[in-house]
Length: 247
Image (cartoon, rainbow, N blue to C red; front, side):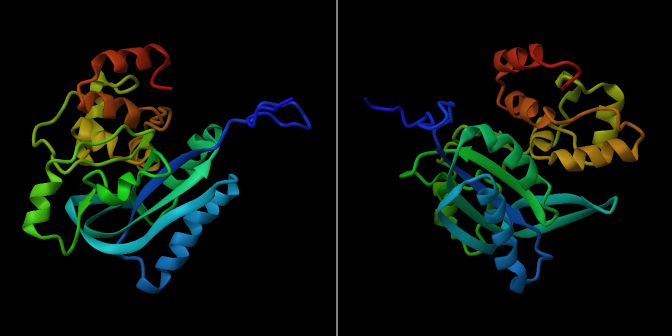
């Protein structure tokens, strides 16, 4: 009799079948070049900690960002125009991807990261790093080609878009954000759905804590903002119906 490969033959306990994911990441340019391998190894260690198996990767290399990015370090905002970009493709069971993403986001040297569900034969991040940045040596011709690439779905996202709006969005449309929080975020450079979708949860928590708003949990806000910036209001409504105060 055939035994389904998603079920333990010894315990009879259902185990999710491994799937292929990619993580694209931006390391702060303040990282010493000699420490880049250690930073990469730390990310791989997180993946293997959850029984993930690395398939392929690209070592981090310095690039010019499509637009300046900010990161709050020791309660001080730092702005960067360059970063080290790399990606890792790996097999892992989907039931651990959320906690893995949270641990990746907590890595202090990271500016941004995106987690994408993909296929073994299709490497998305290396071809189009979700407009997180533009290559340091990219030609004008390749920039034109880049404009034709369409973003693929993101499983968990801290993605940033090259195209940003100069006008502020109504962040109170995000479940859990009221006028006061929207005002505080605007004062800290988070004015649009784009800004919010690209923000790390840890940074949002820091902003809230610094302004006496630590009782609010921003874990779902980036995901909500991603739907809002793409105009997926029906999907956002479904998600918000499942939330309680943004949680």
